[in-house]
Image (tube, rainbow, N blue to C red; front, side, top):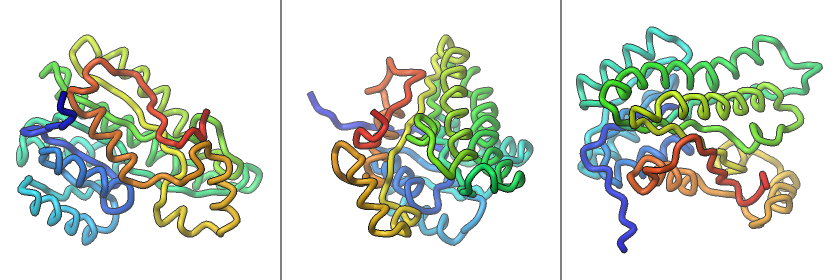
Amino acid sequence: MSMTIELDGTVALVTGAGRGIGREIVLALAAAGADVAINDFAGEEACEEVARLVRELDRKAIVVMADVGDEEAVAAMVERIEQELGPLGIVVNNAGITRDNVVMLIDSADFDAVIRTHLRGTFLLSKAAARKMFRRRSGVIINMSSVVGRRGNAGQANYAAAKAGIIGLTKSLAKELGARGVRVNAIAPGYIDTAMTQALGDDVRAAIVEATPLRAIGTPGDVADAVVFLASDRARFLTGVVLPVDGGLGT
């Protein structure tokens, strides 16, 4: 049996898509045949470069700069995508920030900012997309959680709370939308080789590798492959799932 995954004719939206994991997700979805809306709150030039790469794959691409924590901006973004690309079939809630500090020192504004981008942003976009998908009785929402949301991490109480909240939100949405043919799943990456992890010291990276059963740090492509699978009919009977892409770190 062929394992080729085809998403031809599907319109996807990826948030936080200007670089790193989001960028790889966009390119993987486009390679599988999807047309893609590329969202980020900052770095429009980087988003336009990703859009150019999508068009080189003979797929349509638009850049939609919007703050995922702003309800009106999110609703307008979804409407624009549907007008310019067609019915939205795949949403990947990947936008995120970090404001790390130990809980005794973390600023309340930094706590709120992380919750706003990760958890509120995922809620608002899922809500806007679900209204469209619910009526059409089809669609896929994929939310980006983290191994940190499953097990916590010192110095990241805000991030851990947001990512854990995304897991609860995902499971609730799966129960609400499943009867209408809309699947909602989450991915919980471990440590992935991005600019953030590359900035860690060699001793920290070595400790991460040692703690990971597969003795490696993942790549953005590992996460992107999981997204394409969950977005496809190969995962047609999966909803409410939290898929760990972490080399066993969360085990």
